[in-house]
Image (cartoon, rainbow, N blue to C red; front, side, top):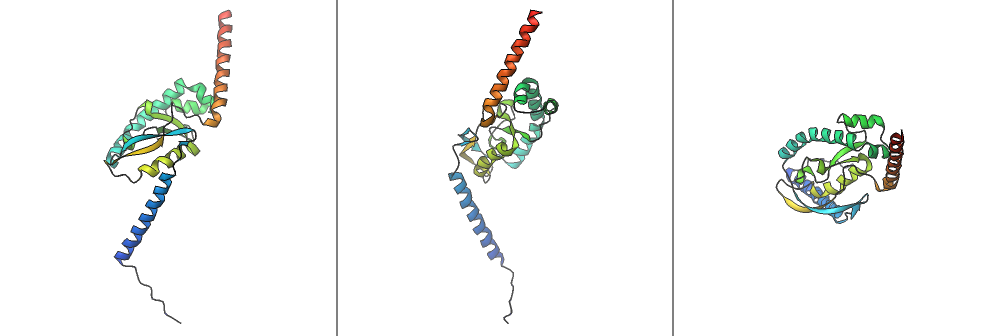
Length: 196
């Protein structure tokens, strides 16, 4: 029987393996970038200049995001309740938003990412369902920006949705019909009140 001698890899061998894995991961990342779609869930990919911020700056921006996020959710609950209801949100979910809490399964997304120069402003926020929409938006953007160094600038393609509430393409007609029905009901109610 042959004795097997196990030896620890040298530091140079460990480094060579790490470098080989990193090179393979970069090749895979570049393949994913090359295969980016033209749109994600019906939202076109938009090219934009992205300058990566440092970790300290991103943490600072995230801290200032929390109160803005709460204010944005309150604003949506006050001004967009019919749209939220048409999307299937309950009165309890909307009441939670009125207190500044995101509904379960939803998130406030930065259209232009914070780490690339996006601002903590209502015009840069959109309420979006996490799965699959928010997750998929990040899949296509994170692969492009994940390896950037602070101060590095490059052109990236990200999904850039319009509005302040993301309505999935499959739900747009249903939401529109519900809003029209709501508007028609409101008009009838208003006429009834005038007739009294």
